Image (cartoon, rainbow, N blue to C red; front, side, top):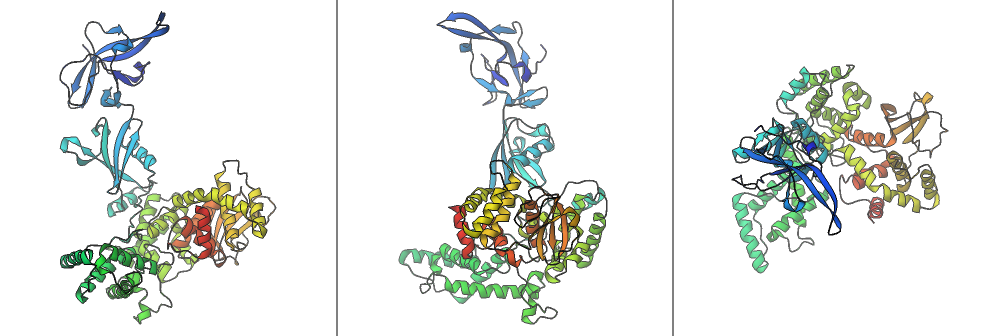
Length: 617
């Protein structure tokens, strides 16, 4: 009796299923025994109770459980191998998910328990188990919208569900599996591999919640008070019990207060070297919420004294770090008269950057990073530069580049010569990720598309001069057509009008024959190149030849496809080059940063707060 491996095309009436028959014998727990395979369907027209009866034709199969495959081998039964039966004589249907068909798995669906992080565990359903590990990675990327490279581990039932590297897709359990995503970080080994293979255009990306050069993270929405030393925790626990019993406040001893403030300053520095008043306030409130015995009965909010103490403690903590050579705070040492540190103003994050001025990576000096920078320049001179080499070298030299931009305030033209890779779309977004640990392109378009319908409604409701200008914009866009680029352009052009900004020198346009005209009057702006359209200040230019970015009177990036893409790149470039927002467009840029992307303080200026209320109403 030769084995018969079931093919999906053999199942016509009930595709991809096995019908259980009268099977007997032992079987593993929870594993159904297949008995019948539906191959043809016979229909009779004889009247039985006034309706047609369907008699399926079935092939009789025997099954043998193959232990090492964890699957059933189906064989044609001896003797009678084909029969016609009634539907009422058949039992339940079983999907083929647990069965091997010609050496591979065929299934109706495949369930994955996907571990991205310890706090992000998802249930993912695939149409079928992928044929290879690479196909599995592609499907995980698409299902979870991942933009970084990763390896996959799985829980192996043969080793008590311990995690093992997934090298062969056949290692996965048949019906469902638990897999873990392991992001590929930039390491010395990946750098050497990328240098040896300059034709490989696959980037080695870091995860979006960790920078390659520093350990700082974005400020959390809810600040978590850390655990203090054992003796302090014990004393706080006893004091909290007294407070719950009879509302007795703790008179904090000096040594205990020092330990609490020191630990809080250390934790705050992990997020921000220069926390603002709102952030310090959130820490103080979190402290008295966790330990109510520390409330100050004479304070309006119960923590005014703690806020003042945290401000001074953060200053003392920065002084300690400055003395040991921490660059991020050492650059401001001139305020205290340190040698060679004559800073006119504090160099602190302007827009709440996470990694503003990181230290040099461990094992590297400015000299070694300068060598890497020169290799990067040589790579950019090639006809087809390797994206992998560029990404690796840009990650490695991040701290050196930030010193030149933030500390030395190097002119943009010089930066173009020394860091040509920084003026490419891919590396602008990568640099924003290094500075703010966010995926700018995804977040920018996601926020813009989310608020576009509400912006259109607000534009349509405006009257007066502002309403006339917005109405002129609206007439150039057919809102009935699903043209996403046109809608995005409408919002970005209408936003400064709505907020009272002056976009005259920011949104520029010219004919293709006039691209070489100087733009000395433009500090920061966009240039839309058109073919032969009549130019006017309120023309949206929805089908440009190209779009360029102007910084310090010169075009620094061009050949961008449209205005929304150019605006997104310019926003990232303002972080990468530490640029101030244009004075005539500050409200617009702050709206994009703080209202649409949610970067920075929650407290907004009155004009932005009013707009946010309208958007959320």
